[in-house]
Amino acid sequence: MLDFLGDLRRTHMCGGLRASDAGKKAVIMGWVNRRRDLGSLVFLDVRDRTGITQVVSDAETNRTVHDKTVGLRNEYVVAVIGTVKRRDANTVNKNIPTGEVELVADELRILNESKQPPFLPGDTVLPNEELRLQYRYIDLRRDAMQRNIELRHRVALAIRDYLSSQGFFEIETPFMTRSTPEGARDYLVPSRVQMGSFYALPQSPQLFKQILMISGFDKYFQIVRCFRDEDLRADRQPEFTQIDLEMSYPQPERVWEVVEGFLTAAFKSAGHEIKTPFPRMDYDDAMRQYGIDKPDLRLPAFTEVRDCFAAENLQTLAVHAELPVIAIRIPKVGELSRKERDDLKPMFHSKGGAKLFEDFKRIEKSFPDAAAKIRAKAAAAPEDLIVLVTGSAQSGGMESHPANKRKVTPQEMAIYASAGLIRVALGQKYAERHGLFKYGDFRFLWVTNFPMFEYDEQEKRFVAAHHPFTSPHEEDMDKLESDPAMVRALAYDVVLNGTELGSGSIRIHRQDIQRQIFHALGLTEEEARSRFGFFLEALQYGTPPHGGIALGLDRIVMILAGADSLREVIPFPKTARAVDMMCEAPTPVSEAQLKDLGIVVKPPAGQK
Ligand code: ASP
Image (cartoon, rainbow, N blue to C red; front, top):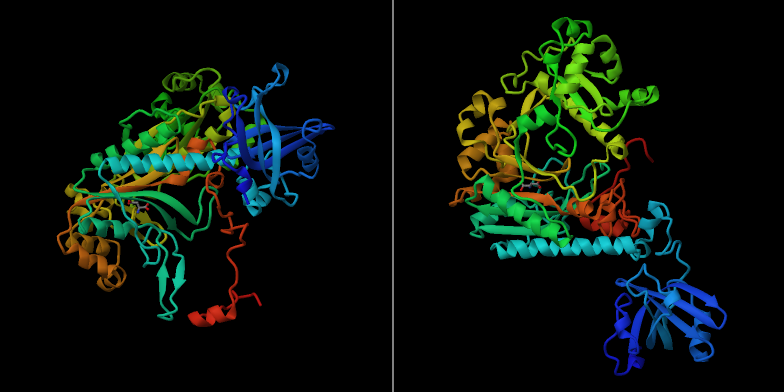
């Protein structure tokens, strides 16, 4: 079909022609982005993923070509053979790299027609997202999406190159496997051959990568899809891509060094220099200073201001005198209006009796001394917003909490966490005013020394804070049974601008300890054996100490693209209801298929 190209073996990319090509023959192929008909002159913008070339057809010099342009519509696929010509000075388009030239068409082929698309790649106003997802192939033709997908490619390639240069092998692990707990529901795949049995799609390759360490591949990585059936939040996808890695014999610092290395390469591929090593912070400090385990370092930390108040002030304010009194400062927000203050109240989610003082002016009026000290201690400029979060006089009742001996008690933690959430909410709400969320300001952080267990208030027992293969600190081992609250995990998270990019840990490599952990988590021998028997078995065959981490590729690319949704950087994403709008998955399947699998679908209760 393309034989007319003759000996012009090389076609040109639409974004590639320059003034220095003037006088040369060129062939381009692409979509009609726009057609302007000026009578005897027709201009076509022909587009491919590299850009746009203006094609000109002049009825006076080439009638045949000109006649063909009459039938052209947006998104038709064409091939144009022509001669590159410099544009007249007054028609140069400085906005595009090919703007100094045009291609004078000698020959035009319509390679395919197109239905009128529901929106055009060149439209400046975007249609609603459902339509974009339904016609994803048109949406992906848009410049911004082409750039995002290219960025994704470059980032993944840089990571692969870096890890490979450090001796890591990329090794595939199965998608049809058995369940590994990462805290979500499994997607199940029914087996036809063994009717009634199911594979689980991996929530992560956790156990396989650990088994690869037992198998002698001491540096593994994989850019891999993971599947988690959870109720989708704004920044989640049921299938997502992780940069998963594992290595034998590492200290946590060695894992961090590798991650910092590949992130440096990834960010460089997107044109950004980042500074390493990243700062490190204990979980306790993160909670005390930011009230969250993924602090956004672009906004100021809390200031503890209890000592700015006289004892009777606290009493008057009905503030608990022994719990933290936290000042949150958001720069340059200015004074809040009455309405803005009212809007703030529902944004505050009080835990453990935490109280919000959103009207600092009133504090200033009633307690001028305390307010002045707070301003000074928090280094607040007059235009900075200050809100206070405190315990209320009645806070308490956690005295018998099993984690009460922790450095930060559960009662304090509740105040910090309440403050942490409102700090994040204020930061987001007033982003325009404080101007601290600038693209390109990348503030990385390692958060370490998490507690090994979390206390589940409903179930009244300790549950794993991480997956159950995470190793406790050596020196805390003796507290596993006697005082689980005090056991720290050899776990770490890498955080960027308030987003958790990834988490990992040093693993348990001894079967006896793994057993102890299962026990501490309330798993009986039988349960442990039936779920992880193969793994417990493998651990007994000379397992080297090992550890690793996994980072979300989609998130990294989203941040680098400056996008506000994962869907902007995933070619074929799902909606919040886990639907693929383009191919309309999931769908019911035929009776015959179900029969093969021995499955009978019962409508949920209450539905016919
Ligand atoms: N498997 C963990 C996850 O997917 C990461 C890790 O511990 O390496 O979050």
